[in-house]
Image (cartoon, rainbow, N blue to C red; front, top):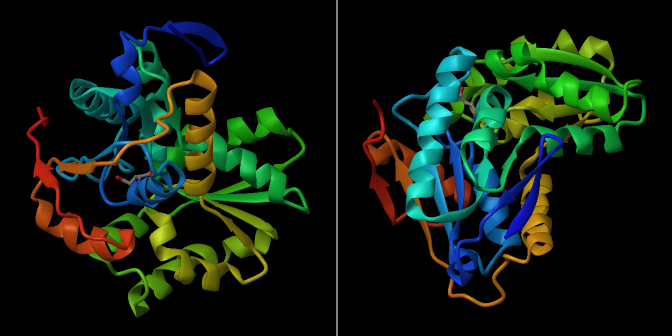
Length: 285
Ligand code: DGL
């Protein structure tokens, strides 16, 4: 039996049997963006089996309503749970902002979303108390980052900017070309006038465009990518629950809901190794 704190409530989660510990970590995003998180999880937890689901058939999430995104998030979780997972990482800010609470209510699996670790890191890093948040329209409208930051430190000022075109650019692999730089300039040149010293990349696709974003906001602004903080948080929580694996010849596997070709093309150079084991799954209603 594991006790998990979920949104201030205490929830007990049955580990079923000793085999629970051997289950994998499940990670999902709408596409390649969550690979930024998956990469850090693979590094931080070398003994854990891991599954990645990219819901490429329903991407983008960031332009859709909270209800629709929550339905997708629940479907993705059902699929990963059916494979046997011991921990779920919602590596999508849009899905975490819209549906984390619903997932925590519906499933007996310890779960973490990307929003909180990014918000915590930004509050820790800012020196002038002015933090910028960029994300999909849906994440920005949800106010999830504003709320988390206000909870941690109400004195920190938050300035937000949706950057919806970054997602198709990342999915296309157009991350460092002239178009990427022009789009970043257009979104962020004026935004820089707020004087933020810290900028949260509030969408897991955005770290792929880090160079263009950094150039547009200036090199004295610190970019916050939640991938590393979330990977360490997963490690910490597994250890705390006593379900981390000490030894294992780790396996990992990818699933996508649309044709794997583009996912492999864009994902491989980014992940830094081959995406051989990728399977198309039909979970789209
Ligand atoms: N990568 C996702 C996020 O972190 C969203 C991309 C999309 O719009 O599907 O918000």
